[in-house]
Length: 251
Image 1 (cartoon, rainbow, N blue to C red):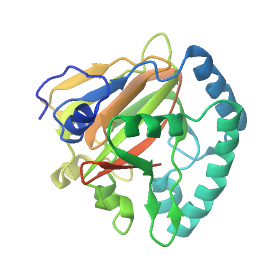
Image 2: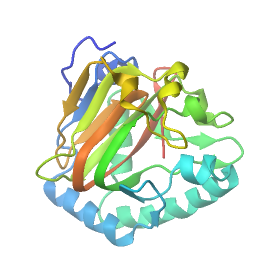
Image 3: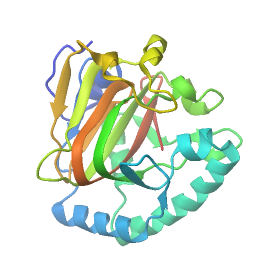
């Protein structure tokens, strides 16, 4: 359970507290200048291929769930090579938030890199997400649904988002002090990834405003949602936590 609802700035102890569900989030302010943020946003929208996603979100990139679990490992890792090359062109036209984040995690004392799958190679890491509408209550936790994948072996899972464009109203993160466990699946909406509100009834919640140019980390096993927003654009990935020090990024 959370011991405080205050959101600290990035450091090794804060990220470990986040992995242990002792705090709701970690903030990294000034991740990119306004010019860098604008240039990356423009390059991302101009060059990135869109893939299928939920109705409210256009994904600029691929996901292990949709292109892997819902298809096959062969399909996902073939696309991972293609999209990693495409995003290298986007980074060349602006900068690489992915590498900058890996460097920041290294400076905080972690062994950080992109996730690899034995026999298949490196995962894709780093999606753009253009949101119109809201994100219902859900979790993202590979050990829940990814048996047979290396990401399912992680002890904890975080997510990070670099915010590129935020509406004047709405778009806040909604975070609940509750980690997913198997009994919670009784509240999952049939044939969907999200959950009925009863799953978090009576659970403390914090509303986290976000700003362009900053990064927010959350524990993606916590139930979370995104408030109604129009034209909200972010870029990020998951982070699997192994052995308290080894962090591996993937999408």
